[in-house]
Image (cartoon, rainbow, N blue to C red; front, side):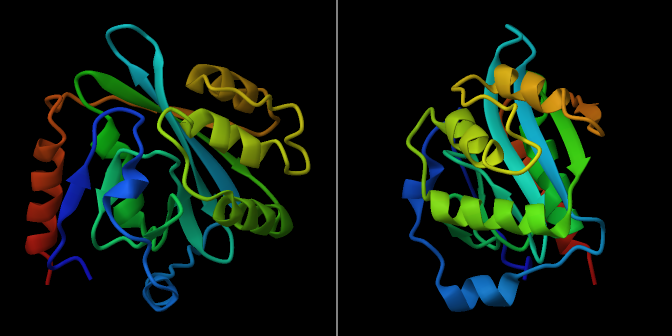
Length: 203
């Protein structure tokens, strides 16, 4: 699937969804990936290394399939189908690249993961799919709107601020938090080139 991978990159928490049409149901179905790990939600928060301000929010949902809800997202892969800001086919390789594409000399990524029941994961998946594309700057508002509708997540406030959402999510019992720092230059094309190179060497 990745042999002819090309990538569209946008800067900031901007509306990436308007750069290409939604993938067809057939393409999405063929790309569907089911991860064998536990049902879980993973919140990504991108933080400026210069100002400390939050720059973007998104959430990976591992249920009957694994997707990333990336409202007004900045990383788009032509080999990863998208519909309404939901990215499908999130294999371990794609998940790793997604996080690392955001981590560079100017930003780091806070990754917060929590195990949930299969039922909650499926509800999150349905809500993300129903949410539709977000306007520029609405990444945290859209992500928090999905999360706060889930059982056990009612304490999450709807917010436009990534760090506020990160703080609310971090108060949930059982959250595991890691931080990803990398020294890649600010131009994301460097990370893309490295990813393409690694794919090209695969059998």
